Amino acid sequence: MPCSFSALKNGKMMGTIAENIDSIRHRIRIAAERAGRDPRSVRLVAVSKHQPLEAIRQAMAVGQVVFGENYLQEASDKIAVLGQGVVWHCIGHLQSNKARLAAEIFDCIETLDRLKLAKALESRLVELGKIMPVLVQVNVGGEAQKAGVSPKEAGQLCHELQQFPHLILQGLMTMPPFVENPEESRGCFRQLRLLGEDLAAQGFLGQRGSVELSMGMSGDFEVAIEEGATLVRVGTALFGER
Ligand SMILES: *Cc1c(COP(=O)(O)O)cnc(C)c1O
Image (cartoon, rainbow, N blue to C red; front, side, top):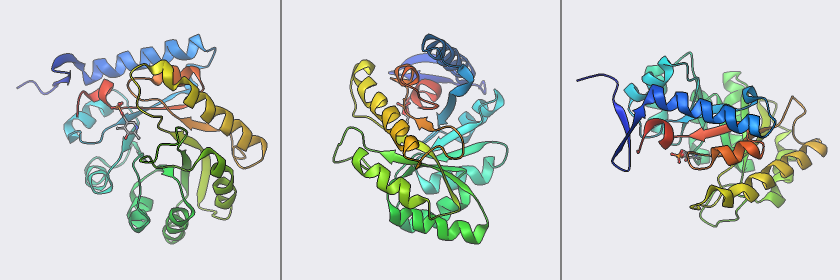
């Protein structure tokens, strides 16, 4: 058995994980340049939920640094084994009663969407003496089944987060409604960027540097980059179908 397996998409062979990462990095660079942006201002978050350790190791071997995980127990098991040297982002919905473990294992929480969760994270971070970068998740599409604050509530939550010294608010994250054509998500991505600019102008965001915008997935990350994404969360195009 060769140890570098190929990713599958709709039953078709994709490249190896190393080849996929290479191709995604290239596409990130082209999209950034098309938008007149520095390609280094865009970081790739490899979404590794439901992927085996070996797949993650292959990505690490070609220099992938940031990984995104959705499920706390799965993330905890993986981080315990693969541990140091890479960075783990929480990109899944977090229950407040799981905040203690999340505060321990993650390097960034991208899905902060309510005060209660912020309080629970802060109380564990105080004990740990750990500073946690966070993003506020915004439900730009207003879908009932999706987590995130409404764009209207985002300012209030960002304001409230200022009372928690261990949470470093770095920006916003969104997951737009599913569409076939990535162009249809452009409006949502733009709305998140404008919201970020608005909150920065009000002094809620960006005091500690530039505003991070986590948006764009396998099907639409290039459009997201054109609209200002600084973090793109790519799973399927990198690892294959889950
Ligand atoms: C699974 C997931 C992704 C990756 O989606 P792909 O379409 O596989 O690239 C990105 N963001 C979030 C929040 C996810 O849950």
